[in-house]
Image 1 (cartoon, rainbow, N blue to C red):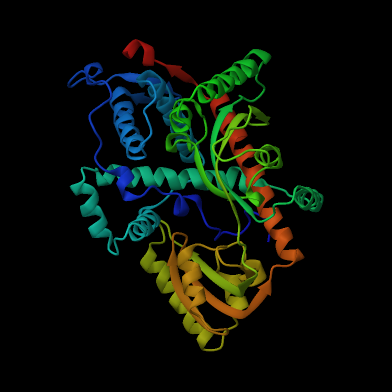
Image 2 (cartoon, rainbow, N blue to C red):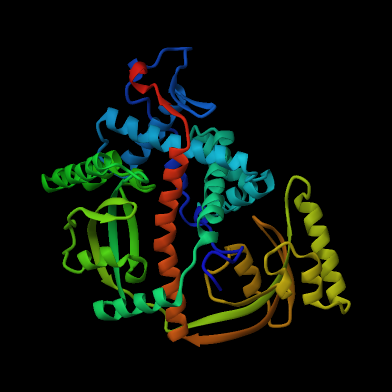
Length: 443
């Protein structure tokens, strides 16, 4: 199965959503004297839309609260303000692109995603989660729209970047050969990261300016500055406001360029400034440990039929269609023929066949329902994509083999290339846009 081709692949917003503590009521604005009661002003024009002073101040308060909860010292107010404004511009550009290209998330899909977030935070019922947020001063309507934006951003990345990835067998061969030479295949690294993006087709002056910015960040770190604070004020990466923390990553998920440097570091040390196609990087090795990859995994050979939900096809209608198909199959209709005729997934022409699925390859709702079925059984489940009818064909226990190693290598290469291509796509989006900054005249 090619990277990014499976509709049910686990999505970013399911794994990286902030816990409920990160969206609680926030403290007063960083500089309340800059606010004028009853008056709002424009801090940036982005094509036909604007970002207002009030919107920027709201985001600043939220980010300040997040950084304080993480124990990260706040960057200088003007540095953080500019950093947040750049992030808001990028978010708005993606929202505009999504609207122009018909990429949207309906309320049913949004409710499913928020229900998952609630459950991840220990709230079985969505109503309890909403009550908790509102008790903490969070506007639930605004929270919903922020989650909608996260999902749309993920779908744009899948559509504009990951669906176009091509990974050759030669790339896989080279990756595995390099990994064998380097050793440490089971090592895992806890990393923090600073990225200074280089614009597409940047002039020599802009490239040098980006390098200088990265070198200045490194100089601050060598002078004893807190990495999280420097990342929050300098990095262009999405994780900048989390102090640049990348969490634990196996060697499979770290580009060779970075691995070559990390092998010689001790915990607490940072790399020199590193250059990649997306820009300049500084990494910090926080911890290192021996990994423990599973020796045996249980794989499931399954097929499914999907009826998507939308404003035109609400969830109740999608469920009704799936149940009708289920009844026909139980009465003797062929599953594959029903999939070819009715399924709205890319697997329809293969009779809904998803091939062998390893744990984690599908969204949790789908995997949970599939795991409860015995071979030959069929069952229905709802996910953010719609209603599915699943049939389990076989199960097997598989040793970690050459084939598995190649699949893991393909996934790792896909992760590297996806991030590079995504940054390229964001740069192109900005290059095509009209952006006018009015922040200075509002200060």
